[in-house]
Length: 323
Image 1: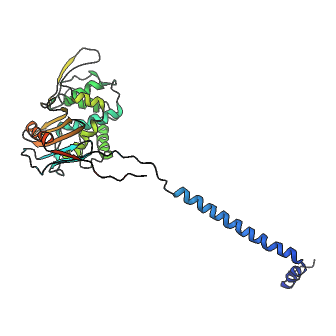
Image 2 (image 1 turned 135 degrees about the vertical axis):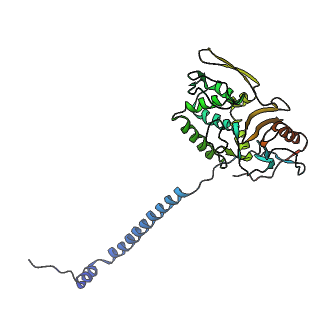
Image 3 (image 1 turned 120 degrees about the vertical axis):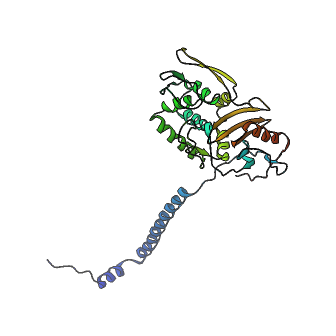
């Protein structure tokens, strides 16, 4: 079979035989093809850019009055560290040694309650699993059953350590898992200077925080209406599920009910000294006052409370409103 060889001469001869009008049609066809290719590439680029484009979202802002003390006041208090937080604005009106770490004692139970509320229902039934827990307590008996809500009262009013351990022992994975959840929660809430090693605040060397973190934690727990009602309660009776045992609870906070004080938590150990986290409602403003390693937590807190009645001014800050 004879091989056919396509030479340049043959190609030139082929195109020379094509009519001129036909050659004119080939040129726009080629141009249309090029335009279509360019269009496809442009469309793909446009779609890719749209996927990466940040679309503005409608933003709304609540502008709170900005509080400050009338003058730079240095109150005389025994506490080694203290703070006053205006909850509405998130502004600290006063701070003493805000970055120093101190043992938190039973104010640890604020986080214990916060973690437990993430898992238990108020009507969940919890069983006491220990015969004895050191420190303050109700002397609960192993095997007694309580509603979770009643154990919350026991933790906040008389600061019962055995109630805190009952809450932690019933958590999936037990007390070790519960303490891990406490530290995880602290990280989630950006309380980066806080560490927990037990649910009651007994470990002075392992449980520590700052007045800044503790004030923020206090403001967070107040958002829970159940806790807010509990910490504002002076007296309460709780009973076991079968009503065989009854316990009378008394709130240890001596300032409760005075000058708008509604809680939150006391704490005392040998290593921590006296600790107090206080909440005060003053008109439309909520304040959280913290004193740590105090020699007289109630007197120190009362001194700071007096500042709120006489030395606070408010101004509306200028703010940029987003689109």
